[in-house]
Length: 236
Ligand SMILES: Nc1ncnc2c1ncn2[C@@H]1O[C@H](COP(=O)(O)OP(=O)(O)O)[C@@H](O)[C@H]1O
Ligand SMILES: [Mg+2]
Image (cartoon, rainbow, N blue to C red; front, side, top):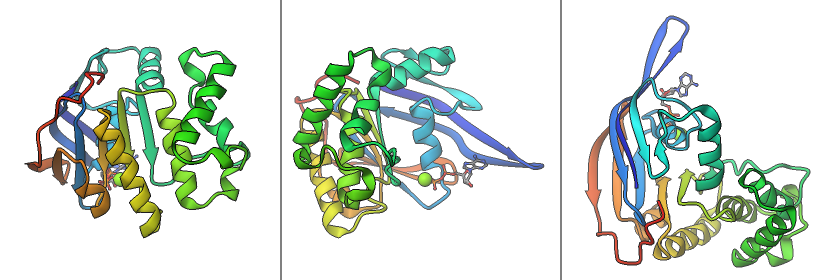
């Protein structure tokens, strides 16, 4: 469960005010797969960053099962994000001089696991994502699709309650987008709670429960495709 009310984020740039988010009410249920669409600049990334606790709203509240994100002290927000939130970005955001295995293990640095367990989980997750023979490759020696799967492994190895993905196929070709879409569908079917910003029809058509459309900092349309099934694990 995650519930946001009246979320507002105003950026002040020079003398100008930009209302990137303008009073958004948002919720995601346990096991739900929500897709967010909307024109460039409509506030999608701003919303995702707020849900992840990477940014603080100008007004409004975010309730999580770990408490109110908007009232938590910064150290607890960092802990919440490290423990419960998996994030995937369009630009992969991998550390170039570290191997795939190290990149994934580093994603668990702040959740209090011993180094050996971090490496074990990193290897297990990369293997699940079909990268068993790429463990020691650096990002530069991997294809775009492989890099994005390493990024997904990094987000998943900590076993998050919520996966947030911001245009994850934005830098992938058709074939790799289809593969990533397949993974999102599988994860959703396994009960993971997912919020994904995407216009990719391959990602969109599979397994999505609800689509929200944003425009000028607001949610202007909501479409329910199907109900959340009994596979939901109640983790979010
Ligand atoms: N750090 C920032 N400073 C000033 N304006 C910003 C900043 N980040 C985003 N914006 C503005 O806020 C609006 C929403 O941006 P964003 O959430 O990135 O949109 P989207 O992800 O839908 O393309 C845009 O007008 C953008 O220019
Ligand atoms: Mg964006």
